[in-house]
Length: 165
View 1 (cartoon, one colour):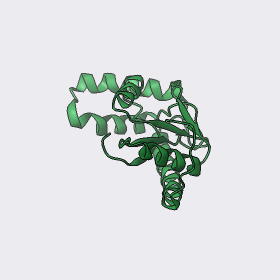
View 2 (view 1 turned 45 degrees about the vertical axis):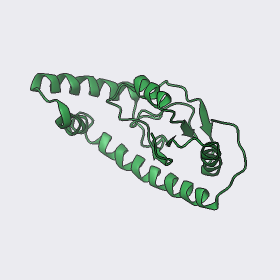
View 3 (view 1 turned 180 degrees about the horizontal axis):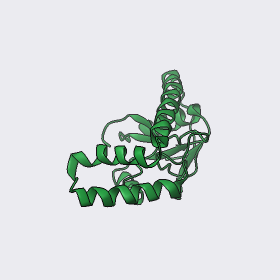
């Protein structure tokens, strides 16, 4: 939160408390921008039901907003949420069910701490028949493309003022 960097992601891990995650980001002064998204993505799903305050349609627009943010002396990170591609996104209700079952199984098995996330990811992969892995690959590829385009726009150093933060 204290490093002036733009981070491109598909939202927070779906296994986290997403409203609380958004609240912490706000408390830390980290703007959250939707790249062609009006809702905070839920990693495997395009939306979480949490409306984003800032939504932009292009990497160029995001780059201008990030430059503007930093030009105001605000040296926090900016989180750029790029939802998974529509053709790879999973049904949020199904994902939620898989997560609930996986968390219950983890509790029964006594899996906690740093072992929990890899355990949950493996359980989700099994429950989804590998769909979560396929979505993860698709969103990673999408994020790399978006981050590369954003880096090019950031390098151009556009300083046109935009509404936003």
